[in-house]
Image (cartoon, rainbow, N blue to C red; front, side):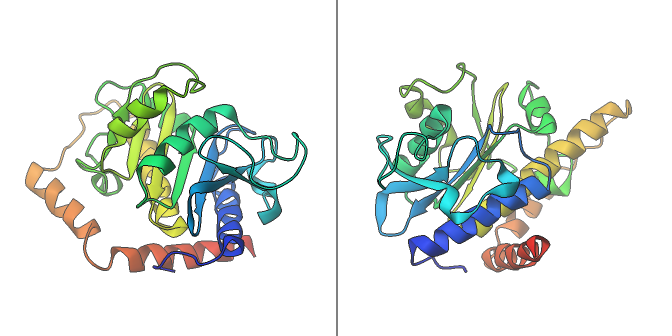
Length: 241
């Protein structure tokens, strides 16, 4: 699973599973938020959830294939091909600009939103947070993402990173595979949860040194990183059995 999935059917299976895992780990917001994956062999097509389907019930056939202009690719009525408009803005921006990323996850968790409202953003205070040390973009809130002109600033703010905090809004994580995207959103969410809990304790927070932060990030980026993502993904899938 460290190589791109070869068929649309495979991508549909993994993407639907990712939706259900996001639900399992309580990262949903009823029918809002969204996860997308690029269709193999078509850089201008991606799959995203049909608007109104809950994450825990997502199946491969519930995913809508659209192009980067928002047009449905497969036949069907308007309801069958309906997607979240803000989701289209966010995901099309990244799929158009970052061909190295195959999967994009966006969440509105309470802890993710809480950290997104803090001026200092994600603090380098836990091992989970250090995965994103100097590897995290920040995007200022511009209202609900319905304006396609926002795509330019979304891409600029993400830069070369695979994760971003959307100020006053939520979290975004991506990966070159569905497995990597899952690991990135899981770690980012857990880091936010830990930060909110640490801050609520009222005591002085201990920060690792810059050298330790850089060393830990480097450990996360070692050559075996993708193997770790694949092992996590394979294990997580068993939660859905």
